[in-house]
Image (cartoon, rainbow, N blue to C red; front, side):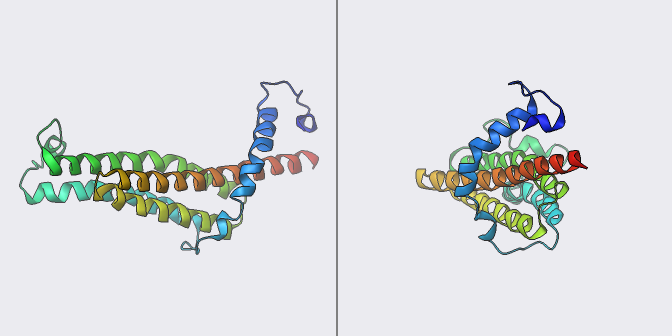
Length: 192
């Protein structure tokens, strides 16, 4: 109830919107409620997952750069020029494009993941739960990279999409439990 903070419950009120969102997502949360118990806890501290994800951003980039260096097609003064335009045709060109897209996609996933980890950390989500969720997300993202690089068949595209969706569900779960915990903290802080 938004009135506990002395805020009128009007439709645009962020507290009311959060409550509406919470009610709508409880069913989804119940479906994925046990998600945080599926993985071992690979991190002693959940904040360790952030630099690991940052490192993962550059894995596809290096898988793109290594064959270019081996072919002598990279000028160290302008390394990005090696992949600009349509210089590379056929299977190698498609591989370079997939590696570049995988690099971009992993960069795009980094900010929401780091935000979700910090949201959970600040709102006091238990370390064991957060470490498990971070591990699930990292496993999904580590699987995503080689699946993306392996080929461009429809089957691999479908598998890649499924792995990506799983990582999004884990990310959503992290943000959702942080929002719920943050809402509970607001209630507790207001009563004191």
